[in-house]
Image (cartoon, rainbow, N blue to C red; front, side, top):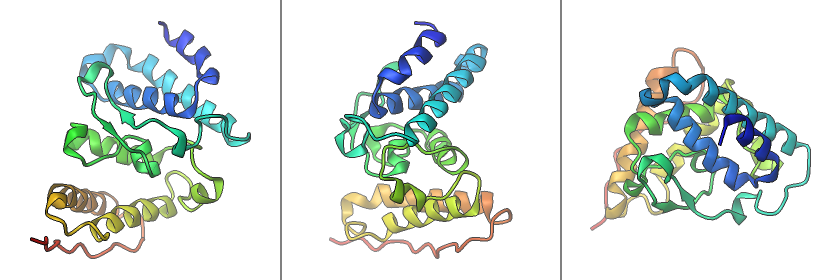
Length: 198
C-alpha cells in the first residue's frame, strides 16, 4: 500500500489503530534500513499529526479513547507481538520499560523525545491532555519528568519484580536532565535508588 493510500485511510481508523501505525512509522524513521524512504515516512507522520488535530475539535469516536483500546502490540516489521497496556500519553506513544516490549534504549528515548517535542494524540480527556502543556515548552518537559519520577516512587516501585523498570525510569530521568537541564528551568526531582522489598 502506498503512503498516499495510507494517508487516505487515516480518517477511517480509530486512534488506537492510528497510534500503532504512528509507532511503526517512528521506528522506520529511526531505522537506517529505511533511510531511502524517510521522506515518505515523514510525510505520513505529518499526515497523522494533522488527523490528530482534526480529531481534537470533534467528539471522540468509538475506540478513539485510550480506555477502549486493545493493548499495544508493536509487531509489524520488528518481530515483537507482546501486548502491553496504554494508560498514559507516554505509553500510548510507545514509551515503555517492560522487557517484553523489546525496546532498545535508543528507541525508548526516541518515543520519549516525541512526547516532549511533538503533539500528543487526542485519545485522552482534553482536560487531562491540557495538563501536559504544548510541545517544546518547559511545561511539557516538566509533566513528562514528573510522570516518570512518579513511576519510580509509586506504590509498587519497591517490589522485586520492578527492579528492571525502576532502573530504566531512573536512567531515562538522568538522560533527560543531561539533555535539557541547560535548556529548560524546571523542577528536576532527586533520583533516589529504590530499596526493593524481599
